[in-house]
Image 1 (spheres, rainbow, N blue to C red):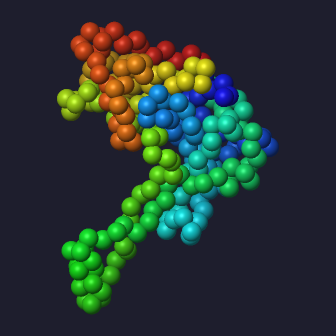
Image 2: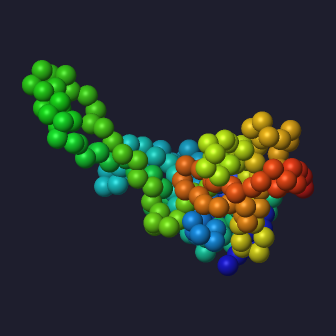
Image 3: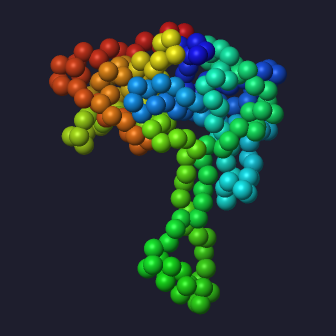
Length: 213
């Protein structure tokens, strides 16, 4: 496991040939235990804007890079052990495929064909990751248990010795500045939100995030 203590969302990602491959936009971790498994890298323009007909109907520029390909990470830079061409060959993170139609939707579509009112078929977004793994990205909601109240949004991720130890929360009414939410308080998680189990005293004791430059 590489040293990922300094992973930061938004960091530049550089291939082994020294060229910028893209930007780190999210981390894929186990839903339970939060073990890091992969990075989602938004490719630079020269790498991206590709259309893989076999996988997607639309242009996409986000690829999945396995955590084992990380050679080192500093505050602002992630270095990979793979070359630029290898980065470009990594699987796309998102694909958009025709959405299966219900009987009612199929009937409406047939009627549209007869009347000449034909538009683009509905599509579904498919994330390229195994079941049991989640994506954590900037802007993701952090909810207070099942109350329906939002603590804030994810601003960054914090790692120590290869383990996700916490997330930085951008406040949403509860705080006056960014705070650190340790993973021990994250009760469950999915791709839409993190759900924290805290009482009032826990919230008051969350530490402010100090960004060490």
